[in-house]
Image (cartoon, rainbow, N blue to C red; front, side, top):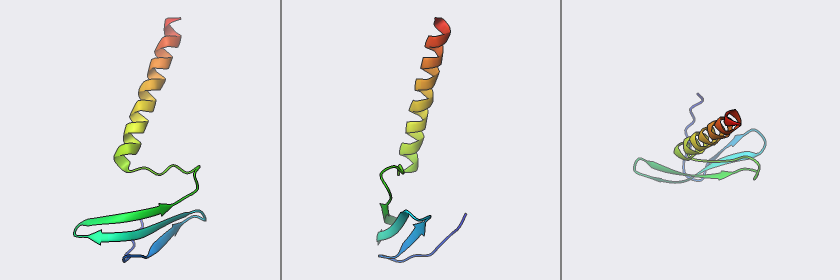
Length: 69
């Protein structure tokens, strides 16, 4: 894992298309602004994990339907 120190209004660049900017720092919370192309999904980890669980459940149900036929 790469660990970087940044201050408010400073950014990091990921690849050629993604920029992460420190928008605000309040206590132990950091607000990030993320600029990325629309085809690159950007989610908080808990949202991403929920999407993956739903996707897996949907695939399992589809597989069960195919097996029942």
